[in-house]
Amino acid sequence: MRDVTIIGTGPSGLTAGIYAARAGLKPVIFAGLQHGGQLTTTTDVENFPGFREGIMGPKLMEDMTEQAIRVGAEIVYKQITKTDLSKRPFTLWADDEEFQTKSLIIATGATARTLGLPNEAALMGRGLSTCATCDGFFYKGKKTVVVGGGDSAMEEATYLANICEEVILVHRRDYFRASNIMVERARNHPKIKFKVPYSIEKCIEGPQGVEGVVLVHEETGEKEEYMAPGVFMAIGHKPNSGIVSDFIDTDEHGYIKTTEYTATNVPGVFSAGDISDSVFRQAITAAGLGCQAAIQAGRFLESEHD
Image 1 (tube, rainbow, N blue to C red):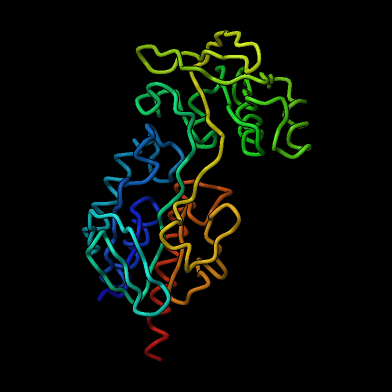
Image 2 (cartoon, rainbow, N blue to C red; image 1 turned 30 degrees about the horizontal axis):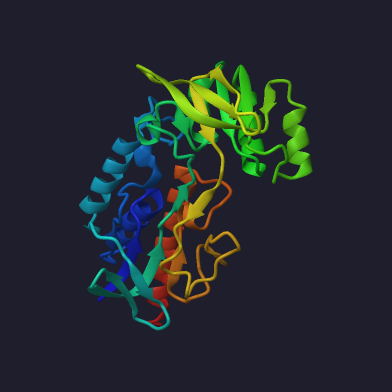
């Protein structure tokens, strides 16, 4: 029986673990399949406060992990595959192994959808990215490519256009899911050019990573190359809420709904990070939510003894 259990070891889960451990709650954190979350697929992180020279994403997660362990959090390198949140104590399973907890913090994050290009995994962080706000700075004054047709693609393209030499927005259809105002804003930006209906066949790879892309016209099959060192995939995220969605309220996209300060519809269950944040999706905002969730879990447990 645990006082606090945390599922996920990205910035939100580890921060929650640090705060819970310092509060004497002896939290256990289940690492899952991707210990460290999406930051383990990035290279330089230059927007996390406290690192004036920047820090590598995996190194930041390694340091956060060691800090959590040092202050008393226990990390279990297993994946939670099933939950029963219908009554307390809550029950969790890692395959056939059963665990119980008085409170729960869900920090399972969201997985960025990608294109499935050849060498995609190897090029992630070396020219391929799923976050313009995170990585756009590295392509200041350079040409970039944004793939997608929704509001997020238009936002990413507009953001990049303000710092890059040129942005090519690639979409496989000649119409967009994005709102008209977002499309017009992108179309009216002098640095954004639309390539529709096109898709990316592959990335042109060089010694340092991506050097460009091969574009294919969806109707004619005609191919052309566009040389750019940065390719941003803005085709959505999939929140990792499946193991709790039978009990926890989610929106139409699967993101967990929270009420006051990370609380969910189930008393004693809290949500932090990208699993409940479809807007910002930054390491620092995830860490802040992890802090809130841990403090809220502590207050919830204290209220039972009042």
